[in-house]
Image (cartoon, rainbow, N blue to C red; front, side, top):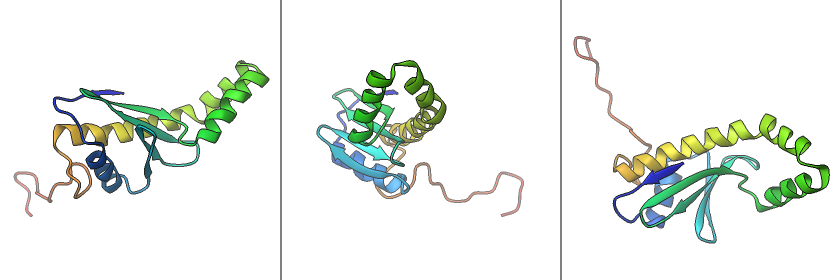
Length: 130
């Protein structure tokens, strides 16, 4: 998921916002990008560039990435990819969309480091009692 930005994004501020908005994720940095880990096999990588932020669903653990590549090499392409698409791919895409929504809210200014995204006080609909 590619999210365009108008200004340069501070990676530390984004990381603090992600930590506050996604309490069930483990947020940490690896080299030049941010990793949002939901489980051992489900997570997303967040890459901050000058005029865009990239959110990619991926294995959050380097060991699992290496094991998957080795399984593809040694077991052939078909069986590991079929298992990957059946067991993991949908969960990684869901995590990518969840993290992407928070990053989009952060980029648009709707999210601050203080709370969850789009957290609004309760207001009843017009015509209904409070």
